Length: 363
Image 1: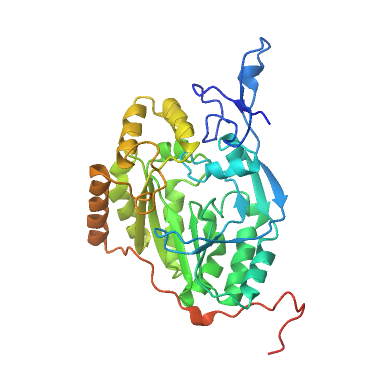
Image 2: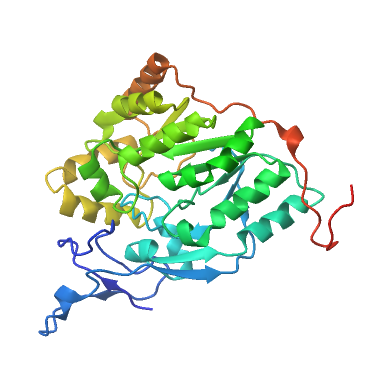
């Protein structure tokens, strides 16, 4: 299936992060836009609409054994993400759907409408052993579509009812809608909310993460959660060399002042199609910095293609990465922020009634 590749030299997609919509890496053919003389090239896809399609998922909890991820299971209620973050490592996952990692990823979304039902089945398995489930690892569980679909809240309600430890990674202040549920979990030492704060520069945020809440709204979310007794981790992520890396200490300080008690960071990595998409974004939004940023990124990865090695993919390597690690360590020590989450209390877990039995337990 052919897909249009827009010219990377024009910022025609107002409110979108991707500058183009290249064919997915598994597609056999690609197409290139051309001017047919009727003026359609300038008008095409100027304002692509967001389309959310209901999906009946086959499974909902994903397990991993990655040595550099502090949890072994996650849950994603949505495929694709309207926030449109230009650097998002999850963009290539749309290729498995025959879609583009570019504009398709942020405009053609899928809502797993049976997420809560599948979660109940998973938790009811006799062999199931509880451990924290982190929601929204691949795409943001509180992206704009959640206002209508409310799949994240449905999932969270199941976890609350079962006394199951839960976490979430989000850029959205919509997390405050569910503060009642997060506070319930927090009272039983079951909650961990991670709020990503990429930059404090509102103009840069609008370009990097065009449909995500502003930095101010994310700080308000941290404050609201903290006031409700919910432990909050601020994620300074990703740090982009030569673009937002100078903000690390300021991000951590503002978050600590808002009530965050834990902090983490990652360095930018550019897997698969993301490298070309982010290069196009730089050429449009920061042309004077593009070559410098890309060279610094390559230096932290021992080359542009070394993105996925365990142990270094989150933090990078080399002198620049070591400097960032030292700056982070000094900042969290000064601010009194933890690196690691507090241990969870697993004794609260009660599995839901088995769906196979079709009835509730009497006692």
